[in-house]
Structures are given as structure tokens and as C-alpha cells.
Amino acid sequence: MGEPEQLEFARERHALFLEAMASELPGDYASQEVNHLTLAYFAVAGLSLLRELDRVNKDQIAKWILSFQVFPETDNELDNGQFYGFCGSRTTQFPSTNVKDPCHNGSHLASTYSALAILKIVGYDVANFDSKALLSSMKELQQPDGSFMPIHIGAETDLRFVYCAAAICSMLKDWTGMDKEKAKQYILSCQSYDGGFGLVPGSESHGGATFCAVAALRLMGFIQVDLASNLREPASIDVCLLMEWCLQRQAEDGGFQGRRNKLSDTCYAFWIGGVLKIIGAYHFIDHGALRGFLLSCQSPYGGFTKLLEDPYPDIYHSYYGLAALSLLEEDEIEPLCIELGILSAAL
Image 1 (cartoon, rainbow, N blue to C red):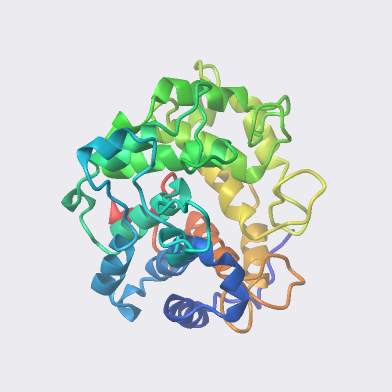
Image 2: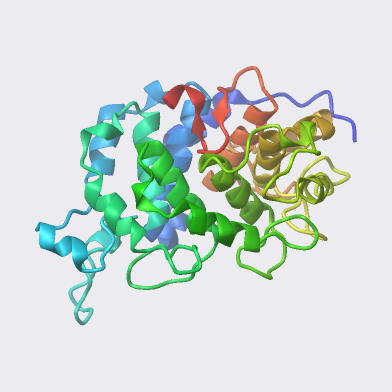
């Protein structure tokens, strides 16, 4: 599992790739238009890790992000069951008039997380806008079992949206938007027999779900950092099994798989690596082999591919490739606040 010596970190290529993505997305991303804010997060956050935010107009980005925020027209509308956060795109903000009784509020938890993360990265003070409607309406999305719906018109509930809610409250420094104890109990119910976390109770352990669980518990203050250094201390989760499951995900090629019997995938170097960092077990992995895997996933066009054999990069794996290298403390990459997914300097 040694690191190929000839591979180098192609910083300038990655900066050019993300700069282009921040300006105009290729046509292949048209089907993801509803996730426009999240795609923007990957581009802006990636540039920030490369110390290249000067390539974009930060004030213009902040103004664009704020244009997606939804407000109630009157105080009485705060009780109408709608979520007043950020829409993910113009189509969710202004639905087609052909739709019968269209809901003109497509606010979504994931889009709201992405919006706040971008605003913090570009230096906008999130205390400058009124978050009362956002937080009070977000609390209505929490279900009796502690999980969250991402949007008020109804959708699946799982750990992704519990994490989004916790990250939103953390960035706003206001926890009135959720019942932390209920959220904690839901998260604990998702830990599987093998130590990882599934997206919902009883489901297969998954790298992304495991990150959402551990990061949310950390943000809410239910677990401390470096849990692995003192396994005799009581903890709300089974740390030994969690650590074992995460460490078993590093494959022979040095990368991390998201689930058992899957190929190594660039993004899981962050999702699972981040969990190991939070619990204080990152030093147990083969750092050189992981770095070699990540550098092998660099595209000649800039950015990172999902798998070793993939021909083209994508914006999602490009950001998480950089985030994973940040965990490895790559010289040319900024330190990352793991739990929030933004550079530490933005806090």
C-alpha cells in the first residue's frame, strides 16, 4: 500500500477547474439544477481550501446566495407549516405556473446548509439577517422520532437532514431550531450491529450516514473529540465498534469504500476519514497509501474523479478529494472544520 512517488498535487489545475465550475456549470449538470446552491458550495468551498477565493467575487456570491432566502410575508404565516430557509435553485424558488396550486416556497434543509456554509466561507456575517423565521419553521420539520424532513411538503427522513439541522443551528449559534435530545436518540437508533450508522434505523452501515451521525453528535455537544484515546470513558455510541468499522473501510488500493464490498471512492476518504479524525483514530490509517490513492484520482483536466478508472472529474468528488487531502494536512491546502465542512478560518 505504498504511495507512488511520481504523483504530485496539481494545485493550479484544480483551482482552474473549480474557478470554471464557479462561473458556469457544464450542460451535464442540467439535471441537477434543483441542487444549484449545493453545487455552488462544492466550487466555492473547494476554492477556499486552495486559498483561491480571490478568483471569484465574494460580495457578488453573497448577494446571489441571499436572493434564494424565503421569508414569510406576515408574522401570521410563521404558523402555516412552511419552512422559511433557502431554495436550492430558481426552479424551486419560482415553480412552473403549469403546476396546479404550486407551492411558491421550495426551501430545503440541504440548500439552507449549503447557503449558510457559502456565506460563512466568503466572509458574510450570518448575524446580519433575521434567522427567527428560519429556525422556528425548521423546528416544525422535526418528526416525533427526532428525525427531520428536508422540506415542508413531505419527503424522506434520515440522518442527512438531522446533520443539516445541527449544522444550521451551529453556524447560526442558535439551537432553538431543533430538539437536540430527540435528535440524539434518533441518531443512536441508527447505529448498526457492526458499529457504523445507516441512514435510517435498521439499515446497512454507510460512510456518509456515519459521518452525518458522528458530526451531528459532535456539533450538538453529545460526544467529545478524541474518544478513541480513552475507551473506558462512557460514551453515547459504541466507539470501539465504530472505530473498527471505519478502519476496515480502507482498501488495498489505499482509498476508502463507503460500504462493505464496494470500490474505493474519493468522497469516502473524507466521510470516513472525518469520522476517524473526530473520534481521534485517524492515526491508525495508512496515510501514505491514502494520499497515493487520492493523487491517482486527479484528472488531467483538473479536479478529481470518483473512482480510479473514471475518465472525467466531477465537482462533488473534486471538493471531497481536496477535503480529504486537508485531513491529511497537505501543505497547499487550508485546514478544515470537519464537522461543518468549511475551512477553519471561516468560523
